[in-house]
Length: 283
Length: 125
Image (cartoon, rainbow over all chains, first blue to last red; front, side):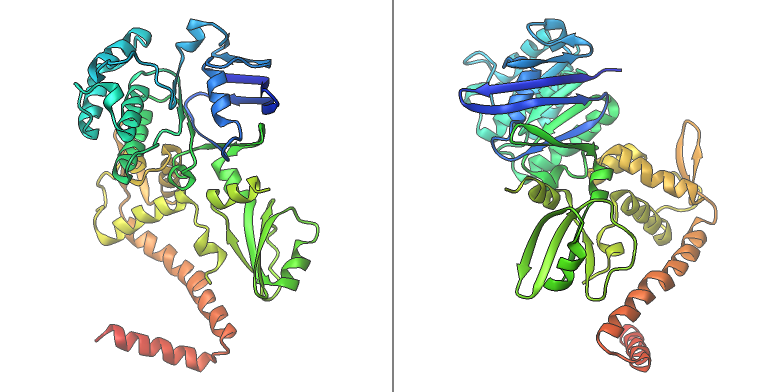
């Protein structure tokens, strides 16, 4: 079983604790959503996994091999981020060939066919690509390099709606044809909610949620009704947050919903992933 | 405001419902192959495991059957089976919602019935 094992990882930047004793496992052939607010520690985690940063404590193994200065462990993963790792002046096609040197299973034909679909010109210099096309170029490398773990840090940055749509479809196509693990870190939660199977939420350097989408969605719900009735319903339940509009209150709960009929005047509705995320990471 | 059942439909149930709708409309005739879970996954931009769960539900319900190594096919009599089940749900869900909402608005049974009749007349114009 191929995994990424993160054990007891902590990382400080000067006086900021970016990650605080994080332990989690990314399993084989799954699509993960790695969610968190700005500064929560998502990019730090991905950079630690790909050995671009070093932890202050803890260990990370990919397929059983420690990632620290270990080319074999790193050959199992590809990390796409806003960092540019290509020599100045290199053109798209040459960069694809270069990627093939590091990743022996890089699929050149596929990379070219994706470039055509996205309208990325092969003879363009990488440094001259627009923000959107710079992302597209990196996404194409990420999808083409055929490694067990693909880490995508804000993959759709600068992409228009059509290209985002195309990217999600190509991701699912690539996943179906050649299953592997994708870890997608994004703020566009609604767009990936249907695609991801596992949700990891990081808040202030700690993992506060790591569960299947199915379980997560079954755990959050909203009760709406007159303020007093909602308050008495809330007693003894785990309240995430609430909104008041005049005499009407909506309260968001975390927990298994009991199936007893609701008191008169109260209504239940579900919470989608984005709403849940907001309530879980507020304050 | 709609009831919990309608606003919280899990994606896999929507997948199943879409396939059923296509069977009812004749787009997926009996004994023909339905799209693969990969095709559904890409088309609807959903995780293939979710698509598979929706398809498997229809296999359990006898709406689809599996041809090993080929794919999923529409069962003979599937449309009739779907209609039968949805008729039962119709009275459980729609009618119950209708009555609850009518009670909220203090509409009498007679008023509701006359509204339904008027609705039918408008549809038939």
